Length: 192
Image (cartoon, rainbow, N blue to C red; front, side, top):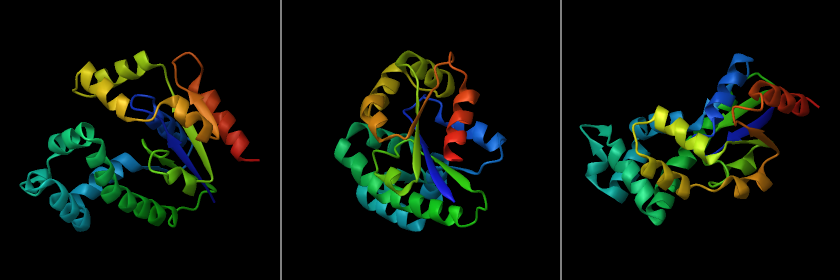
């Protein structure tokens, strides 16, 4: 079984690539979705986040997402500490998920695969890229945040230029090059 990471900056379309793979009957683990579940349900994460950020991080037993997001994007040192609390649990959940799969290829979609070093545990890594203006337009359409907030989040992520040398495959999601053909080309290369 080969484990393949799928990553890319905010608005790049990595989830769309994951959905294409799912439609082709490949199992895809969405790390960002799973981390949202884990911060609500994992007692160790809850305890560590409260210890780090105070009781305000959970309100009425639920994660205070706006507060956590503000902490993540306002302080680089704090973001690193938060990631050190959450990401090992997400990786552990991914490993458990993999053990239940029977496909010869399994995919892990994760926004900060390279930044956390998790890419090293994958057999191959796919980077999904898109022009900056398109990323911003996609996030504006999808999320209820301002252009300044989007640009702030983009500035906190590694650039495509930093990620490309670590990627085994690059998929350009620019709404010009056909996405399906690029995904099929990667699958053909992985099948060899």
